[in-house]
Image (tube, rainbow, N blue to C red; front, side, top):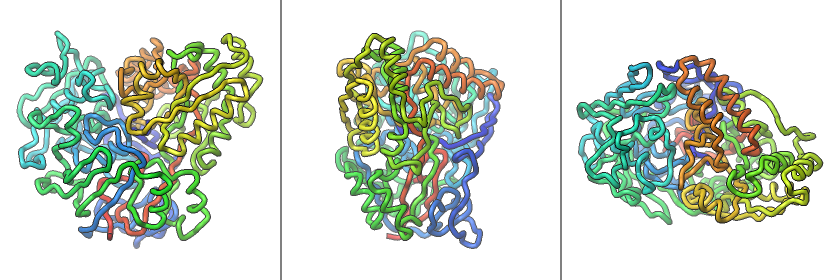
Length: 598
């Protein structure tokens, strides 16, 4: 949940390896979310779920301002640019969430409050599994059309997976699960941009409504994987490679009226969307406007004044804005402080000296003042101090702390002890990469800079734009090595609600990419890689759960990262915005059916 791509707050997933359950269980902060506001007579909204009027935290367990009225314009703002609105080229949580407006994946999470419920979207049902868990078959709903009126077929879904996972570097963002687990072509498939006549043999489309995935090993979470927008159909004849983002063909309830990579996008109703094929989407708003490159505190102020509908990044207001919200009851009632299932951490590159030395990495773990980091982003209201990779509300979490310090405030003596062991008794200089347009990220970087200075480590902060952070900077190993980015700030949430969905793309060496890389540490420990692959193929759910905590422990023994904060997000929903609820599946508001009275 991609950095903040997929953020899932969930515990107690007990799906069997081969027959996944259709829903997980709740776990915001380890307990059930409850409505904090007065309900509308205990009713339910058109989207399903309890309703509530404006009150602090009301949207964490209810749908606030539920309405089935049509009309109005929803206006979102973003402090930078997205990595991409192309469903096959994105790894930000807010795009995975909002892309459901214009892209229908095979499966998705049902909109509404409470525990995430996995449901079919483009498919008629969840996957039908055979061959011991290695073959997954989906049947598409009849009557689904693209915005140009042409029917959606299984070939369009197959092509979408091919272009996103086998682009040869044309599409830089997004995870690589399909490439990892689909049976290899022999000879290897070069992808649609290099091989104009071949295709991926491990995906079959025996007819226009059927798609069959053949995996190299059982993959217990495959129904979760197909919620990825990489399974949203793309017509091959309309694909423009990296430029497809300029002319996306919609399969959802809204389509693009305009798109500018610098200023933003405008969505309008897709007249070829048929509600008879879609039980979860509505078409309430007439128009959805998304503005890029807006200054963060300006976004926050517009939210307080009701001049915009939402901050689409879903990362919460800036720390500087927080007092205006929590100290004014008339503003606070429009806010939600929600557990996001996300981790803020520092990634340390195994391929930048001296961070290639484990003792230097351990020194950094001991040196960091985590209380300072917590205060830098707004204090306990914004999250709890972290000591593990897995947050407490993700399946597989076990509490431990390999590098304990007094009151989590750092241990200078211990840090210097390990600096001596790594041959840098007087410290060293290192660059620290962060997203410069996100005040909280910069605040974390500045806090780390101050902590490390106490042990002689001089940190030079390098700021990069969010939209290119992974495609051009921190996510490009060659750039990281060349620019001495030994430490990088990172925010990560689960791609789906299991330990594997959280861990794989940030600690598995097989996921390291030349661009769009999310394993920023470039951790490539054979033991960890094997633990992950063995566990996801295991039919025993309890064994898998145990494995995720073991991977967590092994990652911390490698001192690959410094966990900082288990994140909570302080979000605002202006009075004019309707059908607002917090999605535990995405760790932010659910954008699918939001509308506005304006």
